[in-house]
Length: 151
Image (cartoon, rainbow, N blue to C red):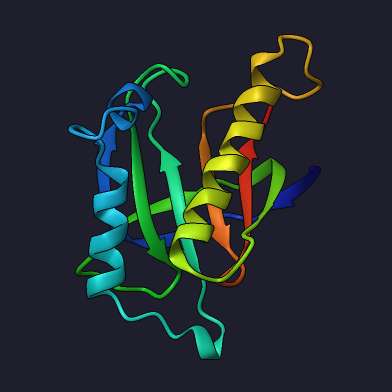
């Protein structure tokens, strides 16, 4: 993991409001649904450098409260929802899928979030979450960075 400064950027896509508790229950989980809808309805030009983001924002409080999630990209599209990745410091956790298929990528995301939860549950960790905006950045079919906003 490393600390980086990220400039503000606007992401356009499909969003929902949820909680971590809802996401742990297959009957109430929503994040997978917005990703499936995004993948089905939004053409992304990966060949020419477009990349996909999963943005977590508008936190009610902390990891226990409600928050919004947006599956999207940087291409301006006024028919979609939009949010801003805030300018600031981020702690970057890198994930790598064992292959480029969708199941391996999902597993890499889950494993990387597991590392994030493990890091931040330690009260003595060097960095603290700011709960401004966090995001997943899909660099390729198998490489992902998850960037957590820090104080």
